[in-house]
Image (cartoon, rainbow, N blue to C red; front, side, top):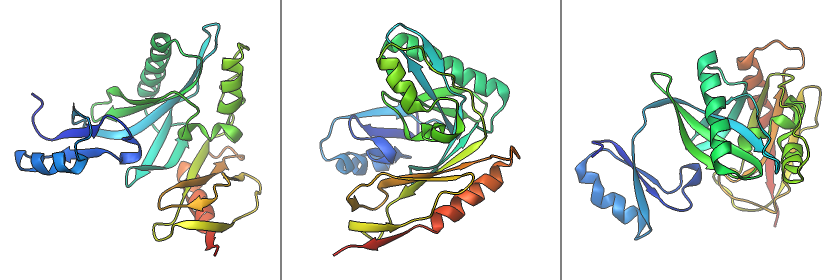
Length: 248
């Protein structure tokens, strides 16, 4: 029906690239089925996308809807590593993404903050990829970048309060802090101190696991240079200075 390649996905627990299998030929079908070991599956047409973006959206109990500016998500090994606010996309793509997010919230009728992930195809079509009915990893930048954080917005939404301003005050890059690939267990983080424009948030999880999200760094463009590459470099440098010391 679709032709190759297609994406075979587990119906549950398919986040962060888990539970996904790209089938590129008929010869891979048997291997793909064995990969899922009898779990319920679904198949999707392969989308040739050039970028993933997301919109943090909110709807309160009175039906008021608001969206934050679209952000760009950069993955490594299928796990979100960097979020760039705002996304480096054409104005039409940004508008399409925000319009889709608003229409989605009208259909869902839920109250609270939702993270709506989307693909931008090679011809700039915007397609919904995933909807997370909660505050979202790609919205952590709002803690320092925006008039209202996604966490405050969530509380406003579920309590029936007027939604706060979603204005992006400064360009910001969020860098996830992931557990080292070669270590699992209890740990002590050797971290950095917050300084102007660099904000560290550790989640105080007791154990590290490979690629587990243990915290994040927000790098805020307080000088309004709008130099995204510079912000990414600062975020990478800050992340590389954080170490994990195993505890016995």
